[in-house]
Length: 136
Image (tube, rainbow, N blue to C red; front, side, top):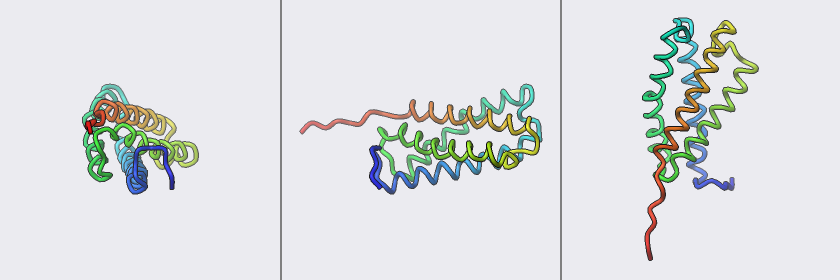
């Protein structure tokens, strides 16, 4: 499988599988927490705020399991997030009950998912470092 991305085939597969796994775990977590009122009032603010530090470890886990260089972090997060977003798009359109039992809770989950995707992309952007150039 040829790629125009700066990854080996193994890294690309790991990142896609990591994104799908993370999507599923997040969807199941939102399914459990949604009926508890996490999308209402100040709970939503707290939820969104907690997603920022809660996403940070997953960038490091992706870096570790895919053996990424510091200059690959943003692209890697983009690949994993792409895989997760594709799963979300399919699930929200055809299997919304995966997230919740009511349209209001599905909408809450959808908003949270979009926020989480943006946060993790921003963290990947911020954590990405340029390649170290060596002179020969």
